[in-house]
View 1 (cartoon, rainbow, N blue to C red):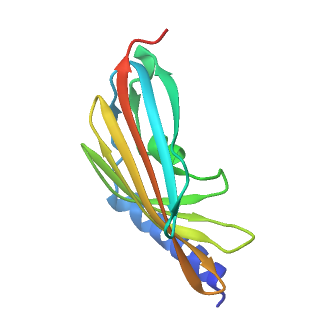
View 2 (cartoon, rainbow, N blue to C red):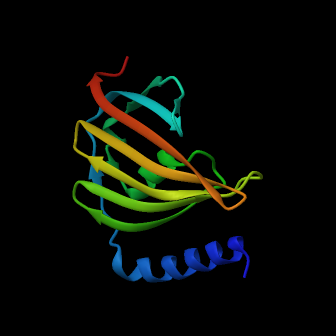
Length: 146
């Protein structure tokens, strides 16, 4: 069985199992302007952090695990399986197909009403050799939207 077929089999089995065990949770975020800082390091080389702002309106304050999953995905072609969800955290596995090799690994999300962080320890599989990647996203409410 190829690596891709094994990964796909794992995802399908995990998705079937997680639908029975992982409960969907709602997370409430404070409305207003949020500052999101994101950075990545590949082995010992770090890319400069990037900061952006988003506005969360009063009717958008309730989010689910999938909202955080979408923020954590390096690309839309990534697949995820939620492995754990509680009132203030989400854990999931991420697999992103790439022409250079799959990128995969665990992602941890910590949530409060005024901040959240997404930390992922991924590995790019280059010819069977994992190349570690760490991606960190920190967000905090900084006031009202303009």
